[in-house]
Image (cartoon, rainbow over all chains, first blue to last red):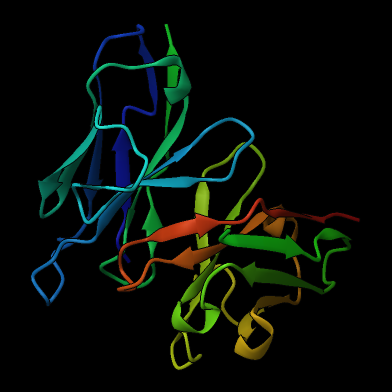
Length: 112
Length: 120
């Protein structure tokens, strides 16, 4: 099974500063159709998860452009260009290439 | 408005059974694969099971295989999770989530969750 490993697990950030979360997979996430199915979710306190990014770098509707995704193969990243107070929460990567689906452990972003 | 509403959670003894339901509205339910994802108290997200739009394909996490059964009724716009032989480690909030069209793009709509507690 594919294992998704995120780092760091805790991320204290000053308001207005950038933040970056790494996500690594134990196997390549390139599917037979040539696409890479790596998705990012945000879970604010007390809320269900919300998808931010799909297929590595595509932002969902309504997601601010300060969020961006990048990467390839087994190495991916979520970047926030300038952290705002509403970004507090836990961020998860999830691979959709292989069965079973797998989430990373989560990265807790907090304001310093 | 696109909406998923879970129900059926509660307190159950180890070894017991529970059936979760998810009522979908605001979209053509029969066109989408669906998922159950759970979150134990204070823990991360764990994918539990997926079912394709016509129930042709069904997948389970190893942790629930043989104990849980996912199903759907497209005429009733409903998703189900039958949970048998429940264990303490099944205690979690269970989310119903729609799979984005294309099937590998992750879950684009989530319910608020229903809480399952397995305890004697």
